Length: 167
Ligand SMILES: [Mg+2]
Ligand SMILES: [Zn+2]
Image 1 (cartoon, rainbow, N blue to C red):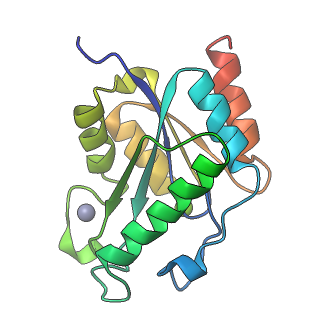
Image 2: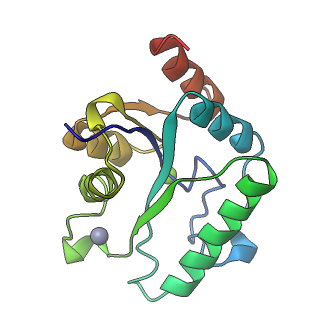
Image 3: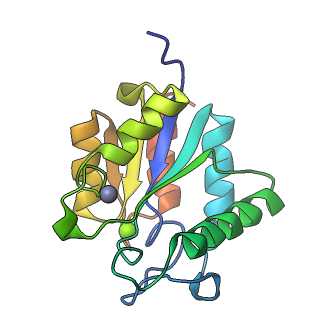
């Protein structure tokens, strides 16, 4: 009880913005996909919180830092604000795989932390990501998931979610 919110967790790189093999380390390397703002707006209109959950091991690999990650997230938020919507929360894991933290996806830590802080009912929530680790994290957290790729876009994933809730 007392978990009144439902949420859509979105992976960042490959979902909101273009993925880079050498990581998105600064704002200048950020390329936001077109169409993501209207997608987020639809989800929020349907009553979901929209939360970004992202692995950013480039931080603890020493390739970028927390300030840069926060700048990138500020920039993403500004983009959504300019398009009449917003992201309800940004959660990221700065750890390298060898640190064995509890937040790097496929571990569910980021989702569980957001659920705790924002009072989210995970069973009525979804994760949308482009990696198997996103889907695994969703399963471990107890929420539904959709994997997107070139064929299944964010827009069509959102259509699936909205039709499943009869919206
Ligand atoms: Mg990704
Ligand atoms: Zn972590």
